[in-house]
Image (cartoon, rainbow, N blue to C red; front, side):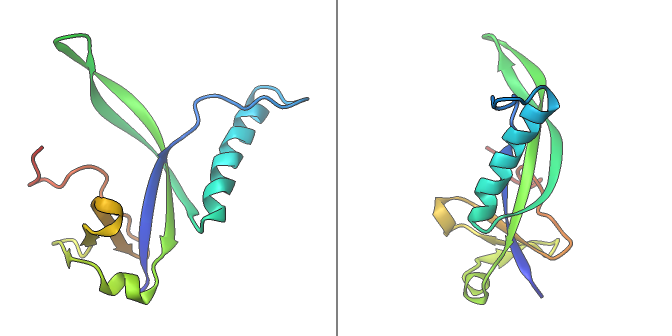
Length: 122
């Protein structure tokens, strides 16, 4: 079974200036630059997500903002899979040693949950 590592990055919010490009063409250029940069590092574009997040608005209030995210994946080598720490109830494998943060690996056709697990508190 092939496992994948996932990377989530914010989608560009404005286009890149280039001679002769206007509107959607400028935005498409910015998006293609992000996608090509990650592709050079072995990341495959997987999908786009639009997710709400609660953020502070002033001293005491909070507001919900929408974040547009791009999800990329790349296949793991066999030795990377064997270094994983364990599996959760959904069959996703987690490793806490990669780059000092929790990284999720999922079998083909499944993407890891975005956000903390139901039993995690911060």
